[in-house]
Length: 137
Image (cartoon, rainbow, N blue to C red):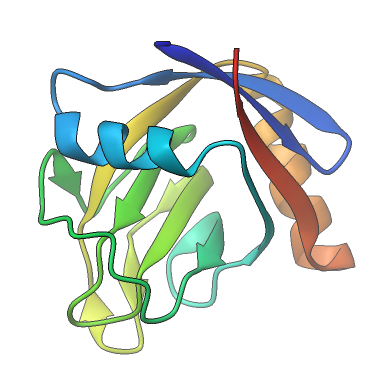
């Protein structure tokens, strides 16, 4: 299972696991699927949506981590300086929190539906939280 489906608001995306670069993060996220939550707009990171996960400990460290994800490069921040979270960038993004700059594990890349990432992000910004579901193919 290298590809997954993501349903977010009215949109559908296909994403690829980054198994070579982030094997532990990919394996752990596979255990959580199907994963259903709500995304909200970020406060400090720019053009992105996020899923706050609070104090959830997934038993992960850093791998394939970045502070500057491109649109569609989905990150999982394993916690530490800030709360655990998933970040879905749709435009210019520097991953940060009230504690400052962060780096998250790039573990998924959207490969289909990218043209709707910005529209989804703007809907979340102006309309509020949207349901998101990550499902195995």
